[in-house]
Image (cartoon, rainbow, N blue to C red):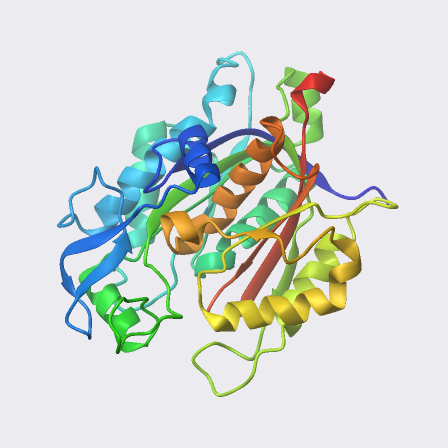
Amino acid sequence: MTPAVLQVAGFGACTPIGRNAWASAAAARAGICGFAEHPFMIDSAGESMRVARAPWIGADVDVPRRCAMLLLPAIEEAVRPLVALGDAVHCRLGLALALPPPRAGHPFGLRDALLADITQANRALFGASRVFEVGHAGGHLALDAAMRGCAGASIDACVVCGVDSYLAPETLEWIDASEQLHGGGVLNNPWGFIPGEAAGAVLVVSQEFMERTGMASLATLAEPGLGLETRLIKSPDVCIGDGLTQAFRHALQSLGPGDMVHNVICDMNGETYRADEYGFTVLRTKEHFRNATDFVAPADCWGDVGAAGMPLHVVLAAISHLKHYGRGPVSMVWASSESGERGAVLVRGIDPRDG
């Protein structure tokens, strides 16, 4: 059976280090750090919280508005190749959106507010939508839904996107109280994470639609692997990566004979739980990787961006090959949600010189 694939026809991003996909990728490649002291939030050590905040959005703007200001430009950027085809080309376009899970400071009605904003900004562009409120791995669930929709011919294309912001004061206080906030004080947690905010969007289309319209492919996405971890963070159980291994093994089935994964881009954020989970998973699957320890964790630049991570990491994988600095054409993008969802997907780069 031929493995299921989708073509990446467009992408967009809005991050603390760049207001579009190419700028964000260039800044991440250069190691530019978007961390800064929060103007008014103080951590448990009495110091200003360090966050990765989009600098053009005021610190007092609430999370629903922050998310809209990040997500709408990312979607607009991603759909430009489709819009450029004009009204003569009929496209049944879906929307698959990853959002943060319920947590302290999570705004009531965020889902409905964002869908309304998307509809208003894009008029009748989207014919169907699905939302996955599970945080980090939500993008993989969204991609799985997009792939099933295209395979079942219910849609021709889909915008797989995600947005998140940890910058609600109640959320920052909750992260600190959960001992997950990275801080500089001697009494603070050196293994915590930097709260961030961002949005990413990937326009994926079926092979048939791409051939019919003559759109150019920027990368190929294989069928995502999904898993569920039962030994969760913030529990006494030791996680040995069972759920992530399940996701990896399914995703790795898309490798061809003699193929290997050359690049790994993931949502590790400095927490030991995630590092341990990945370590156990790699021990079981290391034969498929060129060098599994040589991974890219963009949280070093734009902080932990939660549900926005997966589409942003796909953007980085695609651009790394388009710009010829990836170590090879095959990248793995994986993510780990606090509620147990796990996702992994192979991204195969397209060399523009081949066209």
